[in-house]
Length: 210
Image 1 (spheres, rainbow, N blue to C red):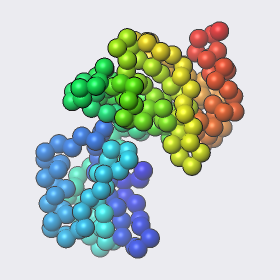
Image 2 (image 1 turned 45 degrees about the vertical axis):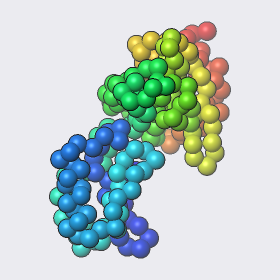
Image 3 (image 1 turned 120 degrees about the horizontal axis):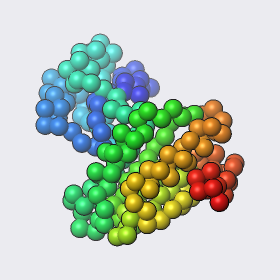
Image 4 (image 1 turned 90 degrees about the vertical axis):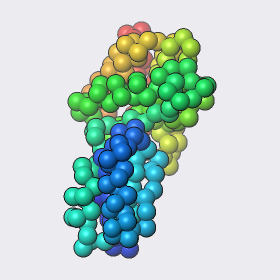
């Protein structure tokens, strides 16, 4: 998602910089101030856990962006998560903590196209991990790792690469899967289409050498 995006009616949407749906008090106050000062319609929460300011006209766009502060994604590759053990009684793992570490892990990867990852604290999968390029699902005994999911026009459930692995093992698996993907994918080929083309067995062989 671009940070500043034109709409069909000539107005723009502005996406303040944030990570995993978290907004600091000062940032929230700045957003509220801008909406009130310019009489904007309000904000929307996107599916990617971002806040979007609607109805910004071209004549005030620069001022709105300056007053809101940094816009766009903090990290190149998006990672979303559920509350996990920080706020859900069903959670089995700290999904928010792992998602933060996942953002750092992915930040320097150069890939054929965008990558969406998700971390869920339990098998309820509230963060929709199985329809993301990289998915992590918490279990009492560790993490389930999936690859090649997509929630777009051609929905695809990701292939499970491993279950009950530690965080360190999960990152090793993800790293090898992404290396194989980066080396062999076509330009702008998402992981879902790549997984369909090469097959999950080829991906697992690249990871585990079996």
